[in-house]
Length: 177
Image (tube, rainbow, N blue to C red; front, side, top):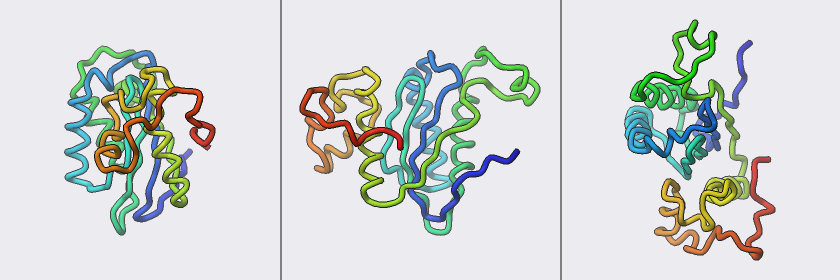
């Protein structure tokens, strides 16, 4: 069965990509490797990184592809395989993965969502930046170091207090739809 994905040239997409073993902390433990691989892929296959957060076991990213380009699956394949090649072997692998000579670091699939409009864009950027608070890693979104929230603050898009865990911060509009 062929998995069907949305393919829109010059589209902006939200992604969720998970480790196979959700109890591992590999993504933050090996953040420099992940950054290096992503930068190499971005140089070979350009895209705009609109927003991103890296958590121990998964990441969320939002990309805008260049004009005439809709091939985000190739980019994710290069990122995931490039990262995996630099990890020591020893992870658990299913019989299916062994048969296909696949590593057991990433879940095979990932979630993608085509951003529809400005409101959808803002909603997903907020979701990305609030995610470390949602998962209980920090009380304030700005305290998570592996997030593009710092770029948004430095550019004056949001202030330093955005995304603080308190009773006055409305998160009802956040979350995947």
